[in-house]
Length: 117
Image 1 (spheres, rainbow, N blue to C red):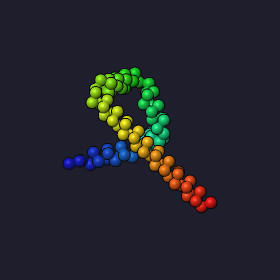
Image 2: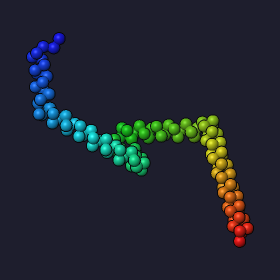
Image 3: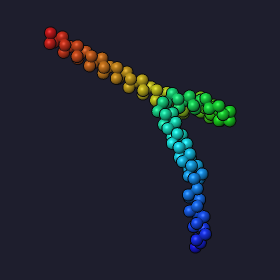
Image 4: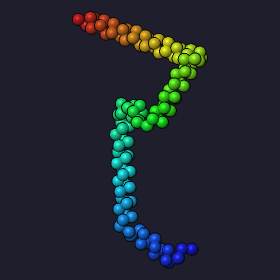
């Protein structure tokens, strides 16, 4: 059980203005850090900039090694290359179909305008 002396010590610690001030400073610092993170997370350009310009050589080395490993994997693995090219081909075909649909809609609108005149 907690003795009366321990409770008195605990009360005196909680009443200590220096400790209360330190708690307030920590809370304020956490708030400022959260605000800075919110500002950074809102702008993708800043996020990329902070990713590539960290100033920490060990992190930069690890990033470079990771990017190099991914590039090597993509360039040497035929299955990955096929998957990338298939995905690119599907994307371009969808884009072409979308353009054809836009052309059709344009021609329909043009014909409608011509018929009204």
